[in-house]
Image (tube, rainbow, N blue to C red; front, side):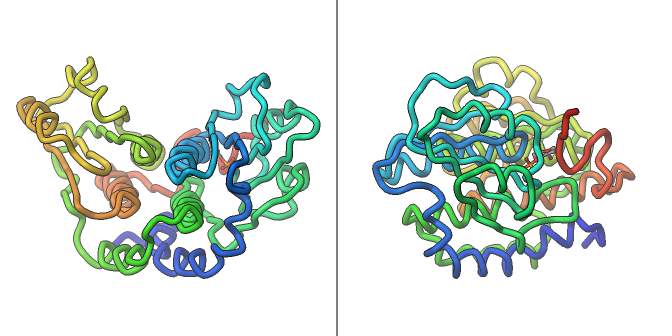
Length: 294
Ligand code: F1P
């Protein structure tokens, strides 16, 4: 196992998730009361987490929930609550979006740092400082937010911590050798996970990666699949799609594990791929912990 900070933070997920599950009963109020309409905002990793939360909350019957990139959202629709996700609490586009929220709409945030501009700007915030990270590349912060969301929304999380520990103790499901192209596919809440997994590969390993809704992959992107491609399907895999992808020569990775465990494996894969390319996942090219615009 790599000794990078990123790898150590990936490996800490079972204990961090265990704490999150203990605290979820009080922490979960941040997602809004049942029946409230909620918009979830973020940038980068936090935008993908927002997308997954929106699907999970609506599926649980807790009320209309939209997600948006903070940089793309424009006011117009009415929400009871706008929830910003930001590990750093300093991301400029998130702060700019919060400035656009209509008077009377409750604002909330999930952050890793309490004395950050985002935390100070909203009506209430959930602090996950125990999940904050030294690595620029986010791994345990987003998964911890999702663990709390799923516990709050009534998903079965009883095996997550043990499943994460088992996954970490085992070799990677697929070796990185010979892979020059990574595709991550998801549907419903796992589309956000697929986007996040593909982002890890770009950030940590500077490698070619893409993500799509599962059934959209056949609508064009499959044209670049080849024997060096690894296609991971997050969640249930349609057998006809798997057959179509395998016919290109690409390897297809499916799993019966919880999709959050698949994301953890994708994080490990990104670190292993970085190291196989002689890169340090702790120093991703052109990236900083957050984007702060002057
Ligand atoms: C969001 C983010 C990260 C990304 C990069 C820049 O940060 O887009 O996801 O990896 O480092 O910032 P945050 O608002 O969640 O702190």
